[in-house]
Length: 283
Length: 302
Picture 1 (cartoon, each protein chain N blue to C red):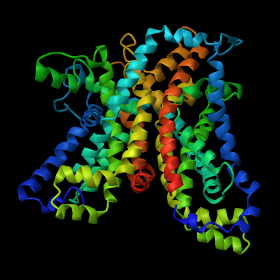
Picture 2 (cartoon, one colour; picture 1 turned 90 degrees about the horizontal axis):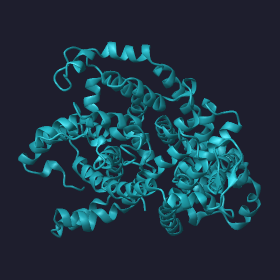
Picture 3 (spheres, each protein chain N blue to C red; picture 1 turned 135 degrees about the horizontal axis):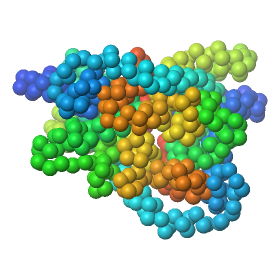
Picture 4 (cartoon, one colour; picture 1 turned 180 degrees about the vertical axis):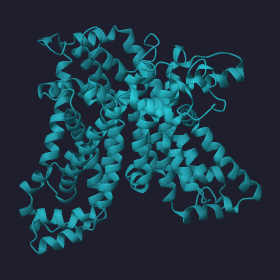
């Protein structure tokens, strides 16, 4: 193990480490802690210049109620779910198929296709912006949730395919071989042998794509204009313009917008990290 | 990978080839072609035109590119992109340092690791707002600390000299968390015997890290490089949220510059925007190609 376990170090070092750990964490999360505290401060505190002292009272309920009552953030959150959930289902579903095709069959152009998906995943969004916006307009899907879902599904398919293909490559190929010898059809091999084994990959990808799409801001600004379809990232930005200097509201809004992916991360931590660190261990 | 040795014998393979893989690929490939592949070529095509997004496209050849070469904002953006790229790379050693610090087995360490990872999970919009608040001139935590330490006032986001660095620091926060998690996973999988053997031979900390541990972390370092380089060139959200490219365009980067030109409030300049996007795309393709070549070599060796 590296570095050497702290248990082998001198008692001084051990105590030092135990003290240092929480201090480092607080420093690391300082900006976030500041915002969390601001979100429960009474409005009067900010007016009186009390930004860092003890809050004069707990106004969490008021602030958060005010955000939901006086702004369309509830609608924005709902829109984000309406964009994110279908995208997760679409992209993960499609990539189960593409990943299977690229992992199991040897055909001409297999590697080229695979690396096309990989490369597509790294390109700048700006090179897609004008044509995708134009296409969405022509399809009559500009300013709709569907327009966002279609684009996100297509784009995330690149990353998902990379992930699924590598995962299926790691499965024991003999399983597929023996089924073929038995004369099982290719679709049934996929459906009844490979798909059940893909559960951990599906879980990992789902949380990752949920977070990526939830946090998307660029496409939310490019493909949506009105409140009725606006996801929470773009919504928060426009609210920030309205709530000038009302930092208790901005903070509460930020916390609300951040909550779903954070909850997702804590609930599915193992899968999330497994997905994110794919390839970080083998070379 | 491991089963390539157990590929099916040629006989059973030939009849399965043909349509089957393409049927499995069809939905994904179709979406990918429509929304990713074709738009790249369309953008290149549009970049040779003058177009407001509604009317007729007017062919102007290299006109947009010529205009770009005379545009000061373009050079500011380019320079800022280089600064972003170089400073963003700091996320890699920083992430390694945090990972080494946290790679212990004391009670509660799992929770610590999760909480250190936190900044990566939240949206960049929220990160941007948090740091805008952090830098706010009168009451921001950073400004207060700075005033307390130096006795001077500093409005980071309103100062042309510091604004880009201020935004990059905000970006480094989640990026370091990302690199940390890659290295934590890598450290979990290093070969303990090699480390112990080197220790027996008397290798001390930094030598051990440099000669024994880091080579084993190479795959993690590679991925950290990829995501950091790509992330730095893609930087859009933070610039848009924190400064909208200001003050006076001093924190522009190509991605934001493109957006601003294409959907400008003074009329849409889709052709010019597309030209900027093509330049950014070409720059990124250099890195993407390098990454792909390396991945291809790995794939061949596997």
